[in-house]
Image (cartoon, rainbow, N blue to C red; front, side):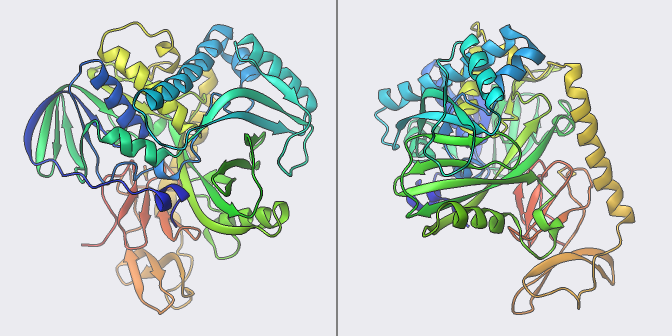
Length: 482
Ligand code: FES
């Protein structure tokens, strides 16, 4: 399953790191946040090196819907009530500044990345909520309005509009940006020790280390695994579905998102916590099918040109963690927990981390500081911890789903083998792939994801293909048997 971005843009391969080098800053992770941070630092005179485990943009960036917007659902009223107007205003303005910075970088560097100015809308059935949200957004400095008529085929009471947001092709943007930076691909970091970062074939010694790896992989200090969970969502690129001017997302958990790219309408949705696939990890239905059903209903006559999925880190208070990794590691910095708003949050991260490293004042930094804590986060943290405990105990008490013989071709499950419980995938031709069912991160039992044919961790969201290769962290190794 390949996103429309991967299908339409190839980024030239870069060398792996070989030998020991030095830099002012080393950024771990060659996704949007990592590259933008490196770019902003280089422009400020800081010699920066990026280490990427796989390919540039090969993690979550290639799977985004690529909306550059400060409209992150219906959140303005809630943020004002829960965090106060000053904090809410800083959050909004940090994101507005990020949109402006994207447009400036694209213009300054003359990057051809299909940048399109567009308005962003959140639609809802609740007319009162929309009015209240638009008023709250205006209090925070956004020129928001309520629109009763919108161009997408959903029933709603109207939508809140944020004007002058943007859409682009993320990989075309990254391809151009990476040409201006020192990036090593195929250079997975194996160890971080104070100011030294090691890979299998080399090391970088640097004054500052930035973790821009989607989910931070060093468990202690920081304990980010206890402060975030991961969620998956799905996208279809539809041909023959008309054209849209704006970008749209619905209010509520089961809502859909819409944007245009070229001749395609990108329809997104069917999100769920990682490790909790639709159909309970069993055979029928699944998230892609749910989305296809919506596509048939909303756009009869459309044709699916691509489908893919994304994974997002979710913080308890819906604000990313950007800043110092932990109090006792003053030279380590982190950017994570972007919710569903990876593009804008990546630029917010780059601007804040640049200012921290350059010792410049940044008005928005405090709002995103990883050391913040509010009691409002507690219920979510307790819920996330409960899920982790469940995942751990399942490993000891979960009775295998079925026997190897019962497993249908094309499906996976936990089965009892001669050497104990194992994860097994049976190919259509009957070939068997067997993996260790224990997550190498912190030991939870993995679950089968029939949508992607992967093993997913319900605790913190690590994922593995059916052969056992690592797809996504925080785990740092695969689950193949020796
Ligand atoms: Fe943490 Fe699996 S990702 S235990």
